[in-house]
Length: 304
Image 1 (cartoon, helix red, strand yellow):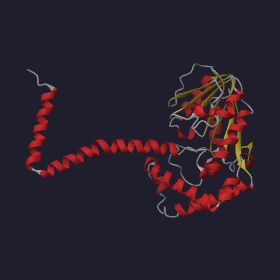
Image 2 (cartoon, helix red, strand yellow; image 1 turned 90 degrees about the horizontal axis):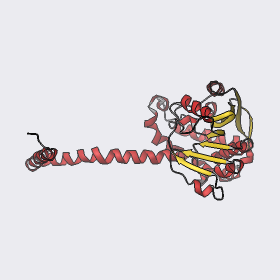
Image 3 (cartoon, helix red, strand yellow; image 1 turned 120 degrees about the horizontal axis):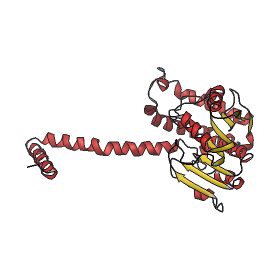
Image 4 (cartoon, one colour; image 1 turned 90 degrees about the vertical axis):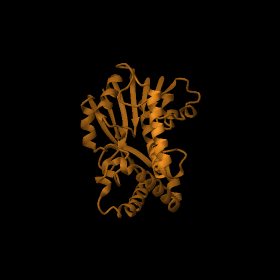
C-alpha cells in the first residue's frame, strides 16, 4: 500500500514541530531558512528586473538629457531612410515611434519589457507593439522593408543570431539601421553590456549577413565634447578606488547594481555642477559622419 503525499507532508510537519518544541533554536533557524529560501530570491529577482530598466535612457530624467539627445539623432537619421513596413527591435520607452512611424506604412515595435508606447503612437493606427525577448524574431522571411534597432545589440548574448534574424526578416534590398556604443569612447566597463564593438569588429559581423555595410557614426560638437571630458573626469574620481581593476575581473552580474547606482549618481552630480551645459545640449549638437574611433556611437546601415 502506497503512502500519500499528504501523509508524507504531515509526517515532516510533526517532526519539525517536535524539534521546535524541544529546541527553540531549531525553530529560529527554520524560520531564517524559509526566509532566505523564499523571500530573498524573489526580492533579488524583482530588484534586478527593476535595475535593468534603469539602464534605459529616459526622456523624463533631467540628468539623461545629453544621452537622450544623442539617441534622438539616430532616430532622426533613420527617419530620412525608412519607408514601407518597418520593424523596431527594442523600442524601449517608445519615444522613437513618433519620429519614425509617420514615415512607415506599417510599424511593428517589439521590446523585452512593457512600454508606454501608446502615449507616443496617438493618431498612428498602423503602429503595433509586442512584448518579447530576441532572438529569434517571430516573423516570416522577407517581411519588412527596414529594421531599426538602437542601443540593443550590446545587450544580446547571441549577437550573431540576432543579426541573422534581422537579415532573414528583411526583404531583398531592405536595410538594417542600428546603433551601439563605440567601445573606444567608453569611459569604463558597462556590466549591463555583454560586449561593445569597434568599427572594424561590427563591420565584419554585419558583412557576414548583408551585402553592403556603410559604417557611420554619431559625433558631437564642442558642447558635447566639453560634457564628455567633464564626465570623464568625474568618472575617474570613482574608478581611482578600483586599484585591483575589479571592474574587468569580476563577473558582470556582480557589478550591475553598483554600476547602475554610481552611474545615476554621477549623472546627477554632473547635472548639479553643469546644469546650463546639460540643458543646452540639443539634438542639433550631434551629427552623423563616417565612423571612426572618436564617434560616440556606431551607426551602420546594412543593405541585404
